[in-house]
Image (cartoon, rainbow, N blue to C red; front, side, top):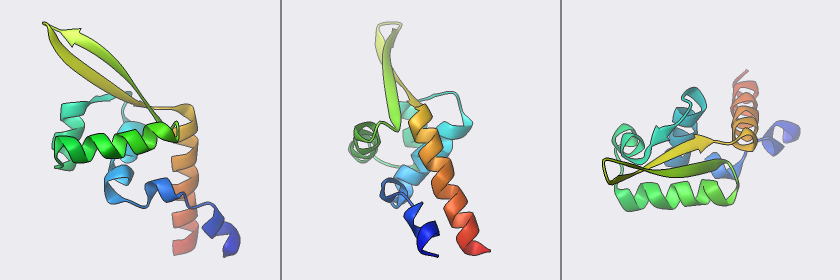
Length: 96
């Protein structure tokens, strides 16, 4: 049991960060507005959770301009995908 608990990542304890990673792991990338709509959160709330995941190097972003409008695309990093899968596997094992 202790070994399984070690595999839980505090970065994913918050439902918004869990939602961000869930969405990014199954998509190549998502833009800021799509994530905001999908998770039904405010700009500031989403931005702060994305920043937390960026600090852990679980998420990266690329800024582009489309018809002179900024568009920020977010991607799950390899490190983020591995950490998320480890976290989900630990939850699944705890439920067994």
